[in-house]
Every structure is written in structure tokens, then in C-alpha cells.
Length: 314
Image (cartoon, rainbow, N blue to C red):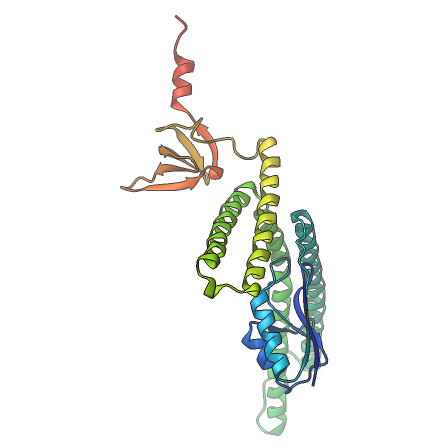
């Protein structure tokens, strides 16, 4: 029987370590509780569990079933939550490693494409140009050689095309990372995280109202999720406050935008129909209106301010 350690840390997520063997039944048990095989690590683990709250209920249930099957199981769960700036720095480092790997892959594919091209040329370089394919055994060998040369040239072109796509993948990764750090996107993420927190708090409150659903494992899981959400919300709010002080966020609200003003949203000027606390409703040219968060407003043309400026002094 195997000796297994199921551990969770913020930096590594939930992983399974031990002297398991193929066919000993541990894999089937772990898969039933959401574990997947990570080929790069050669370990089982919970996907996307890094810097997230541990799934305590699934971890403990998997451990119980493994023990019932005769295995020795130890569960080690770290309770700390890493600060947002540490999480972002760690994620940036991992993304840079992936980009470096893509760059190395581009170089490898380029060399492979060139080698295939030279191989294709070498197959037919001894054949005179325009030489017809004769009938008989020699003709069949000639035709097979031409077909091999063409197939190799096609593989060379396909490999070269894959190499040419690598820079766009690297640049796309950088754009996606930068997009997630925009104040607009951060504000929407805060709203979503706050909604998740309210939902979690309602579920935690329901445990007291329905004791039959309560359990130490579930409560521990909820408490871990709450700590992670609180840290993520606090970190993103700090980022927004920095952007607000720099004038890159929070410039417009219902306090300085009025009905019939023109607002610039996603590159287009739209007429304000209604200014709300968190959103602004604008015309669409049809019978309905569109609603956007204030973080989407990039500029304002205020008719009231213009009228005041144009009014001559009495």
C-alpha cells in the first residue's frame, strides 16, 4: 500500500505526493474528487488551485477513501493567504517563463523548418530539371522520391508557419496581462469579487440556520475562501486608489455627468439618458439604451458647462 501526502500551499496549490503506482486504485479515487494528473509535475493535483482557498471537503473526502482502501494518507493544508502584490509578481514571473519557452520553441521550429527544406532539396538535387517520370521500376522509384520531396517541403512550410506564429502568441500574452491590470478591468473584477463574497457570506450564514448541513470541513473551506476574497478585494482596491490619485480612474460619476451630456465610451460619443450611482445609461440610436460602468467613461462633453461659459457677464 502507498504512503500519500496531500498538501496545499498558496504558491504550489493542491498536490498529491507519494509512492503510488499505476493500477493501485489511487488515481481512480483522486479523480472522483476533482484531482487531475499534471504531466509536467508528474503528480496529481487540483487544477487552478494556486493562490486559492483549498477545497477542504474534497481533500478530506479523498483522504478518507484512500485510507479506507488501505493507504497511509497525510493531509497538510497551509492556512495563510499571500498578498496581492506577491501573487501578481509570481504570476508575471510564470508568464515570462512561458514567453521565454515560446521564444525558444520559435528558434527550434525555425531550425527544424530549415533542416526539412534542405532535406527536401537534397532528395532531388541529382535529378535534372524537367526530367519526365519513366514507366517501370525506375519510374516508380523516381515518383516515390518526388512525392517524399514534396511531403518534406510541405512539412518544412508548415513548421516555418508555426514558428512565424510564435511572436504573435508572445505579444498576445503580454497584451492580455496588461489588459487585466487596467483600472477599468480591475474595477469590474472588484465588483465581481464583492458579489462572490456576499454570496459566500450568505452560504456561511445558512450553516447556522440549517445545522444539519454544517460540518467543520465545510466551515473551514468557507473561511478559507472568505480570507482569499478579502485579500484580493483589498489588493485591487489599493490598485484602484493609486490609479484614482494619478487621475487614471474615477474621474466621472453622477456628480459631474448629467442627462443629455455626451460621454466617450469605447471610442464612441454617446448621449447620457440617466446617470446612476455605479452606471451610466446612454442612447443607442434605437428604442433601448445601453448601460456601462463609470470606469468605461473616458471623456465628457457637458452642455451645462458649455452654456455657462457662453453666457456673457451681466
